[in-house]
Length: 307
Image (tube, rainbow, N blue to C red; front, side):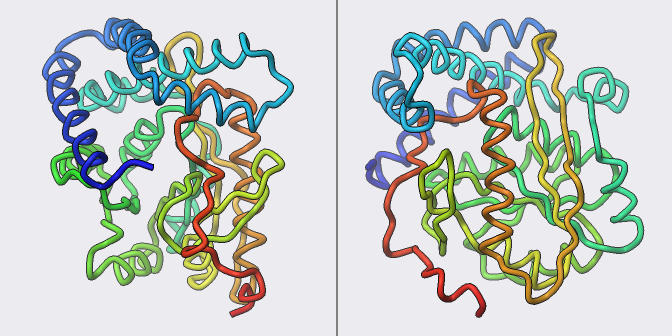
């Protein structure tokens, strides 16, 4: 496991790369940026050997019957997808409403907008599958209050880069480590807006084990608790890169919640939906993450579910 200093170094290096790419990516056509992103991904596949080995090890857990060639091909496609996503991040401030409609197929969002317009709050659950920042940005452009929870990074520059990028799309970022984060999360729901969480990673926060590719995986329980406590409407949102360069955004069926619902059951249900999307497009998930890592310090015992 990387030390905090090493993680900070990597994030500072990534930030510098993003600054350079942003200077280029905003000034070139999107298809050219996506082409350059694929080439960047090819380079990263060969250079980032540690991440490549980790990704292959993780995809072997999820798809044990796959051949080595299929695993390597999928991971190479994942690096290409991430390279394209980086250039798309740089290009996103060019989005207008007309370009958003042209480049993004959106399904199910109208129902969510109606719920928000009625004064109710919506808690959206998503994952690091597809270009999740494109999902956030284009949703924020719909003119409704949208907030996302951001985990603390080791690089303040990277935090600022992502926060400012989202703000250009009308998305407010709430830092998990801030003193007002709990209040801001609750208020963003109760004021009738959308609050989004990404829950497909094993992070340093109170978590519970739920099935993920037939293996128990520690998953943050806080988002489900907040959704139930506020009796919000929950929804799973996914985004998928299409072969023609567009993105397909899908908002699932709204889930009505009330106090007394089981946050573990809700987390497991959402994780099943996330897994189904990853199975659809396995090359669009971030396989470098140690999803099945043990973190005893952060594990919540299941007998506390009713608290």
